[in-house]
Image (cartoon, rainbow, N blue to C red):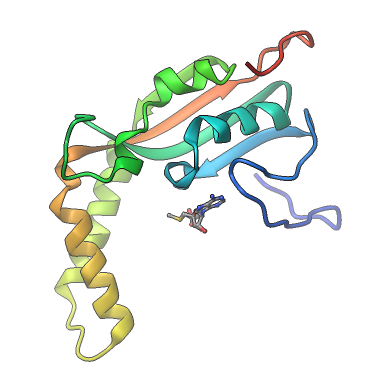
Length: 158
Ligand SMILES: C[S@@+](CC[C@H](N)C(=O)[O-])C[C@H]1O[C@@H](n2cnc3c(N)ncnc32)[C@H](O)[C@@H]1O
């Protein structure tokens, strides 16, 4: 569990330029954000750069079931972590489906649509997003990817 201590601090950074030092992190966690990286391979190389040898990266995201599915945004269609993590220099790459997360997310959007929005702009906005998301939900898988930076001190990011 993450322990917040007086040595904990928060910084603003870019996925491709975190501002953190090389080999300065024991672990990197990227939650539902990787699709926004420009360019995506550079963000994965940045994760690799800041990890100490043997450090672990964990990514939660979505992937297209069909990369040619034109209904999906290019941001989501570009994700293929099983191929992209090794190319960024990671080893022990595992990408697994998380169907329970997918179901929870689907239920959340469905329940958002079921409430009476009235003239509440926040609820209306959420319902608009729910309609957009649910329209293409069948084209996505929910994934959890884990990988490791190589132990060898010689191994450097490609
Ligand atoms: C779907 S939200 C996920 C937020 C958070 N990780 C969570 O699970 O609640 C995507 C996040 O990515 C951030 N983001 C978008 N582009 C980014 C970039 N180039 N570098 C860093 N963060 C970015 C957004 O600010 C937003 O907070």
